[in-house]
Image (cartoon, rainbow, N blue to C red; front, side, top):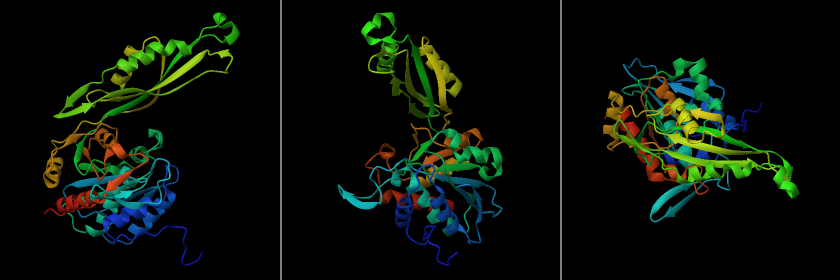
Length: 365
């Protein structure tokens, strides 16, 4: 192999955090293609004496082992949703705000860049730190590498508090809603459309289902002082055989975002009660996470950031840490409303502010 092998992109972790963000965003890592970025991260972190670097597939763990009383896990996923003419990145100024524009800038490579900037720098933090860069977050939960680590190497996830670098406008968002996806089916009888009266049109039977969804009023639920807003929506519909055939089956794909006061089992039962006449198949489910802001480290972190915590409406991997008994919060640059958006962009000041807040807290100053 040549000495100057260019197959692995090179990351300069001595650069400023905005430059690191741009560099890792420009390494395309749509879910399923995380290997080049994982290679670059593993190579960049190797050789730092204060870090033990462990690789599991395309997940990279870099941790200190300084014998501190407490350990904090700081995690970020390295995959993105598919591109939409939004790479390579570029800088833009809008209404006096400087933005880095491009896929992954918000969800969530700005947060990952903060980790990469601080991991080499913080050689003597007040807590031991596990820096975690993982793959498979933007696809079905069975592909999420945190689940694999929890099953096969749970010691790599051990900690007293966790911070997930999901976009939160550089503020702290506690807990998260749970998410549930189901398929609701209605059935009929096929027939030639010229003689429709001998058939039974399945598509016509989902009118009441769609009316119920349109009229549904989502709850706002207070959990440990934070108010979580739920959502129940059709996200897809399929049916039909041909242009001259009465359809015998139709499926409506429904997504329910439920407050962490409910379990996934309770959410499923709620949908069964709402749609008793339809066949219900669970496609995907993930528990929510209660805020856990009463933990000592969470209180210290809130004080360092200097902002009041807010609820997280979307599902994030804080739920996986919560299931392991580890209080966890979301804290990262970027507006969650721009995650997956064609115009995805992050204010550069939020990237530097997240790095500053974490640096101050972890240094004990």
